[in-house]
Image: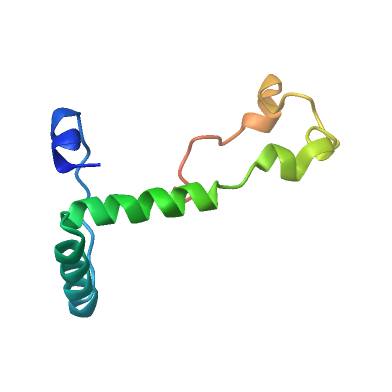
Amino acid sequence: MTDGYYEAMAAVVKTVKVTPALAARLARVAKTRGCSESELIREGIERVAREDGGLDMQKLIGPDVGSGKGPRDLSASRRHMVGYGRSRHR
């Protein structure tokens, strides 16, 4: 990946705060590799995102979805909608 690749694409700019020590390490590694600090940051974000993968709530909850007792659709009864959308501090 080169910065030219991202310059040609629509990009989202994010601001990241790092400690002075981390900033110095980032600069050293970028110079050693001959790439930009932005490339290293993107590489790190991509690695974390790939490894994390996020939680699959459907898989976690699985068969328990919809197994609760109560009215099928709370919005169907005006009694259940009393006060909905109003501030509690009135």
